[in-house]
Amino acid sequence: ENTFSVLYTNELGGQYSIDFYVSAAGGAIDTEEATAMEEKIHGYSALMIQKEDQIMVFWYPSGHEYIITGTLSREDVISILNSIKKTF
Image (cartoon, rainbow, N blue to C red; front, top):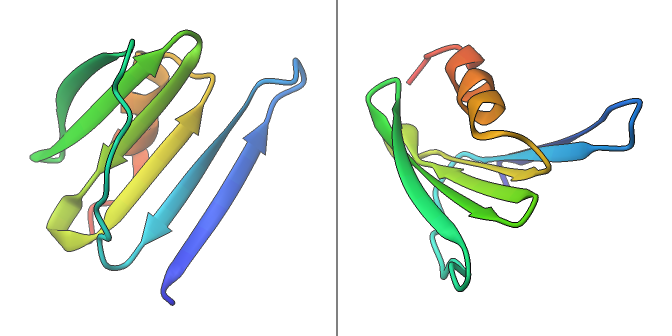
């Protein structure tokens, strides 16, 4: 399977992960008691779901899938996604 994951942890114990899939799998997303918002990154929609101090982001540029989960701000997630080199 063409996929990889990266786990980041900071000195305060906060962490987040980035998962990449060459082919988007799709599926159900739990938004109960959460705030959902959409943001455009490199022209592709990113679905951001904030639930308490956790954020989940699903981004599908050109059929690929990126998922970011962790204790990040919305601004940090946007910065991370914008830093991904556009090769799609």
